[in-house]
Image 1 (tube, rainbow, N blue to C red):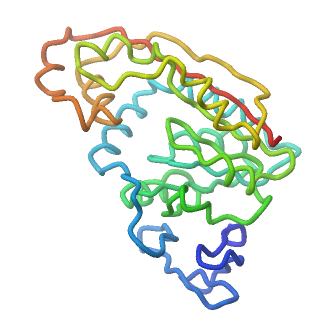
Image 2 (image 1 turned 30 degrees about the vertical axis):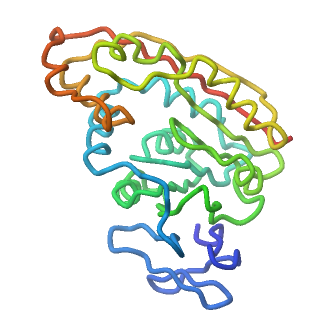
Image 3 (image 1 turned 90 degrees about the vertical axis):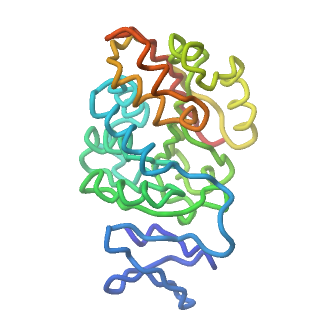
Length: 271
């Protein structure tokens, strides 16, 4: 797996030597005892990663199976690995939940989980036996060799189309899952959660222009029956954790609330 990674300083291939990854120019990066490698270099990143508390909430919510249909749609979009085992990378991997789902459906495929947050890198190192966890800032560039990946995932995460196009094979897939305006709509008003731009799909396509063409788009929409604890987790795990005073508001909800999950899973190929 290390052979697919590129040195963030000079872009040469990284090779493992004991518990260190080293390139031909002598740049070296230690493998942390928690199982991830940090390829963050230079000045501090401007990206704000998820906190440990946000990741705990996300893991609890995902563990309840509420987003299992979304994970299944992402795995289906990547496709089986019978003729193309290769490697799949998830940008902004968080807990590694969606990447693990892809690997479970593709037993010959390996995964790279990339996130800018150290708590996420620690979690992803334990997400799946075939996952390598990398701490890096996708906006500075993906520390991966050109044309080396069969697929890249971006699930509720930022996208860097130019870099993704660079690291994909000729027929590689970029799978992007993003919420629609209906996602969690029953909670947005009562809990003061962040709203979704109804023009989001068009804006994503525009950002892809010149690098990718869309080949498939599926809307995954279904009702979820959430307890108060589930609602507290779904608020605390995302951007609304920075905005909503969720505890008092969640306490005012019914014991169980029916909430809509609505996500677009789009598949792109290089232009």
